[in-house]
Image (cartoon, rainbow, N blue to C red; front, side, top):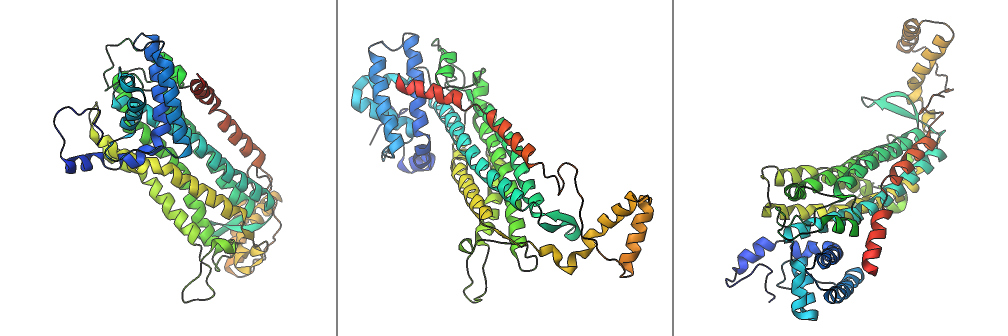
Amino acid sequence: MAKKLWEKDTTVDLDVEKYTVGRDRELDIYLAPFDVLGSMAHITMLNSIGLLGDDELPVLLAELRKIYKLTQTGEFVIEEGVEDVHSQVELMLTRALGDLGKKIHSGRSRNDQVLVDLKLFIRHRIERLTVAVKSLFDVLIKQSNRYSNVIIPGYTHFQVAMPSSVGLWLGAYAESLVDDMTVLQAAYRVSNRNPLGSAAGYGSSFPLDRQMTTDLLGFDSMNYNVVYAQMGRGKTERIVAQAISSIAATVSKLAFDSCLFNSQNFGFIKLPDEFTTGSSIMPHKKNPDVFELTRARCNRLQALPMEITLETNNLPSGYFRDLQLVKENFVPAFDEMETILDMTARMIDGIKVNEHAADDSRYEFMYSVEEVNRLVMSGVPFRDAYVKVGREIEHGEFKANREIHHTHAGSIGNLCNDRISALMNDTLASFDFGKWHRAVDSLLEK
């Protein structure tokens, strides 16, 4: 069994070890490539301040590149008895290079190692998430434009209210994703700051060049105060979870609408047959299970920020083992959100729209406001027009004129999808993922 990084002469109780390690070995696989990158930047900096020799650095970097390749091919494993990714990487180095492998830990702690691992992981996964969000956005805009003229009722208080359209409905969710992307961009900015060099939360007596590691890893800046760098553990995850929660809230509402509009009582859309399931007793049923599970999964993701808050909100400054538990649901949340976004995009892309849903007589009264407005345009005071149309409805005399003339920005006749798309593109451009890609590529090539 491998010796712990912190282990001296006393052997820890096996039950205690199992309890304290928890799911670290499982979840740290996600962090493995980023642990290697952090180590590469750290030892490059150690060489610059004289703590690693010029002959030692290339040897360590070459071995770390080999380990990095293993993380990319799925061959990297955390062995039985090794408690975390940091221990595994150091174990592999010492096996290959002997005592030289033990030098990589100078000037840092597992505390700032996991901090930088998480920051790099988050940065990478946020980029992937932006791609998934944009893919759903593009489908929504495409379908919104396609069905821009298909009228369906809009609702207030679950009562038929005024004319809407399939295009207006889907475009609303596209614009909602723009705001979600803005929140995600804020979370990215919080994440893209370097905690490396904060060590256990109080810095080091070594003359660490923290700006150098910041540049090598492509961060926007460092977390300057070392105590705050440590305090960022849990806080960063909560902020990112809030951004994920914002996306989940949009998709959950879309899933609810889709289940509702797919039902026979509404019949505005029909979900793709291959995305529905049957009943064990009712042969006619086509259940919207995919969107029902999407709704539930999104609602579960919306609970994640509160879970992290409850795990961390009674902790003072400094490191505590409580923070380990934050990884358990936070790290897998990215896979969950990406899967949801992909499935939702496929569902929306395949919907069939009932282009004559609004012809049903039950929706006749949604044109009442149109009639009031026509009277106002002819010179009748609004309140008099409202009373006149209201009385016609009460006495069963109202006849709907189904012509609609909505032309202002964002209405049925002017969806502004081009402007919504421009907003999305501007928001995406503000992330500047290229900066860290160039830094990491350079680090791997050194």
